[in-house]
Image (cartoon, rainbow, N blue to C red; front, side, top):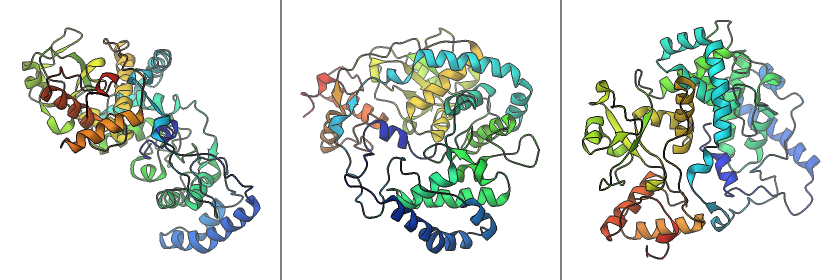
Length: 414
């Protein structure tokens, strides 16, 4: 969390991870690393208010992790980005593994009963529903069961010393040293992921300093071992990022034929009553809550007309603050609904959009930009601005808007 989907970039082949073609003198690099700690990092840590005792203890026995991705050891060149033509673009449906969601939901319902008193206090304190907090906990660390394989100081130091994002990781390393210096956790117990994300909520150290709470009142903010601290910290994060108490995340809906799918995005919000006035209705058949009709809501069509359609609240975009992905936020919302209401998969199926490459989508984006459309970032990914621009282009050119890149558009969009 907080790294803007480095993991997704790795999966998509946008970060090269291959080892250098020549034999690396690891002993020499380690020697440079020790010099860097003393001559470069320590002055910065001292200036940031880190005590020398905490600093030296934190780095006692720390060595480089040469197996981490995205490293540029001294004397080597940054890896070139792999061609986007190597990454296949497909339906978002693969993100929603039904077996995994069912397992997380079953465990989540059990934990909702086990920790009912704590969740009630968390919701009273922060206004975030217990099922949302549980869903984030489950998605991030399997309810604390996921193995945290790395000491965070070593990972962050490695990346601050020799990654392509040194400045960002150096700041996170300084934040981690503040955590140690503050006494919440010893450096040897600060375990995390390969990216330096900490504990059960998978907070980066800077997020820990801002949002972690001591919800069990034992004097320490322990997101590694304390369930109350973990749940309270997740809820505090969401509250501080703008969660609106008393509102859910959104609704799966049906959008009638003739109502354009090219209306999505937080910058095109309308009162819920306006969406209902276009004939948009919940797939459950239930009416939208009367108390919500004047409140702001947004259309979301992550697969265009090829998949489930949604009306979402501003809270959906708060979930995206945790991980900047429409699909992540939908995963959390769906899992939370399963935990709270025993519901299942989204009603509409995720359609087949054909076998394309990200380079195909990038070409479409570039052609749209050349015609004056705003696609957001031209990166081969179909964000909401790309989706709605495609829908607008389709309507302008006499096509039924689908608001999603598919094989049929490759030859038409020129």
